[in-house]
Length: 360
Image 1 (cartoon, one colour):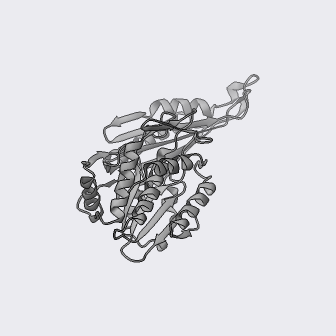
Image 2: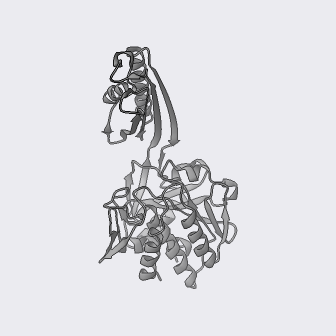
Image 3: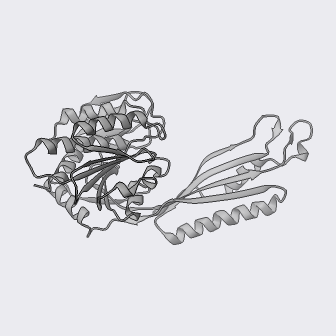
């Protein structure tokens, strides 16, 4: 039986451990120790992902990620009735530590029961937030599972990701001509000026129900009294429609070519990279049918919703692992208003336990 207080304590312990992307060593050590105590054999691949195994053959993967976004340091969780939130102006870290807590409690509760249990692989990745880097660099030769339950969705556990977009990042580097800003500015060509004009030509925000475009970072210049030689623009676009992705790339490329002609003494370089590919939920897969059955046991109706974000499932699917992404009780992810609903967190742990015990 799920131990509610133990689950809350585990979650609060997890969020108190700072683990911004790239700084996951402390939480990795904590999780390795906890999983070892539960009887798992712990492997760590060359990227630092945790792969915990118990039993052989017909394994079920339970997956989450250990990194968080900023501001995510010195988090102080507060339990307020049925809600957990952050005391100060930080994220809570429910993304994805609510998922990890649900897995740990689901496993421990299942192990305490006398029910038959599935063989398991628990995969906790690093560097998910910057672009699913942990899943991309996961050593799949160490993975036996063909099915994965991924705890990394927004909202209650019956919120199931039905479709996830393709995500393309872009980096634009603009090189102008330097000059003294007070003595002879007419000899210069401001890279920042070109950058601001170019940004104004690009789409922004939600373009349609399936697509978004965002300029997230701009930088340039070195000192206040010099015409800036270099500026950079970093952004992304996402869509669930391949034709839209092609059109957005074409629009971006055409805009850059136009500005290159307008400012022919400048140099404008574009680099793009597909960070992950879109997928649609396969409702006929065994893992989806099994999870839906477990949700029915919990008197929960699957709520299949599209997502504008990506998870490790986007990468794992490309490696032949059937995945389903479920909610993990967190809300307002990536903001200082993030909160976790305790009854939803309990449901997430219950779903995990049911999957481990074959729904018995």
